[in-house]
Image (cartoon, rainbow, N blue to C red; front, side, top):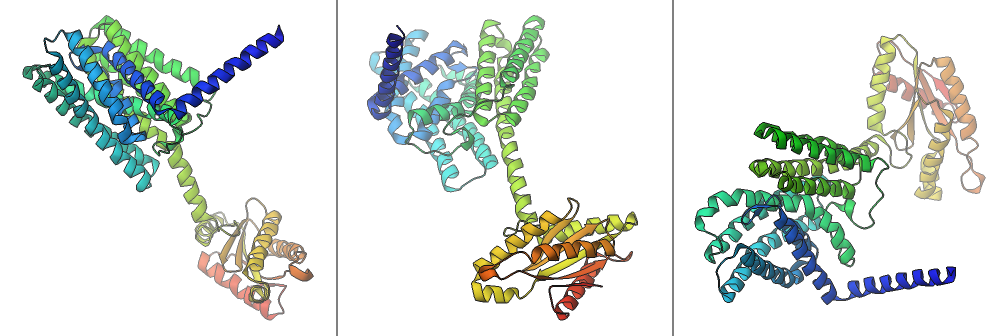
Length: 489
């Protein structure tokens, strides 16, 4: 019995793998799936159509944009067939009295008007993101601007094509263009990023770079993700029930509080699950508009979907910006070779700590050292060994210092140690301990490393430059005294 169940499971997995392999390797199968998917999302948009040719949102716009972004020109024939097919369905649904050839002509014109602006916009976005190497925030700004402008151009072309083919009255243009535009724009902003992820699964051979956090494998959401989504969906229901029972335009604006949970999701979850939560919230909004008969407030909900989605998109960039700023700070404040403090950070921090010590009347010492005969090490053994000596020396010294002490590379093989709350006697003890451990560092052929050290203690009228000048002078005296020793000034 167990063997039979195991065989059945293996058989199912085999069929599943063969089906997936066939889908990925067959352009016809992928085109068919794309056609069915487009028509399916068109039906979803039609369910929440509140006036002829205008929905709360228009999911096919998002799918068209994503498909053209990923697949390019090769997707146009499929999208054209889909456009003609839905034009025929629309003509039948609206009971428009047209001949078959007129409906076909209308379908072709609709396809051209719908596809071409989104092809131009998606091509521009792909060029910007792949050629210009934009940062994530600039990618998002480009995406939002292109989505808005592409949807606007599409609105004008599609409505004029409908008027030209007698599928819509010219008198309806004024009342239709704004909700048409906002609905198409919502479809792109909310759903295109989600469709990008699905396109990656359907076309794994296509590399595309937009909101790169959602490419490839979809990471696991946090354990709290389901509660965050539940909170946003609950907020949608409360806001829309309030509008239903109060029948007040003012109460409908409560939907804008949806920004808060989605900002929370965007700042704490990966981009894919942020986008997924947007799609779920938006779907519930458009569903409740129809169920609760809130068509009088529909423009408020259209704008809310776009505003919430736009804010969430920008919030995606916050973790990326934080990480980027951290990398920049690390790069500026850390010496790339020795991983000690950079000269800039050393001076900046030194001035702060020196001033604090003077205000609090505390002791403060500076210790300056460099490697004895460092030029000779480079000349005899090469710069690789010289770099190794700097890295090893820095590692050893850092292990011997307190957390409050600061080690920085001032330049070349010269280093500075800041010793807050330390008098000169203690600083000498620290320097002796450093010498002892540094002398145990071996280079090639058993050669041992040595340094010369200069020490000075802060005076009440010192600044960083005067303190460093005395310590550097003490270092010079240590070298004159035979090197591998300490001199106080």
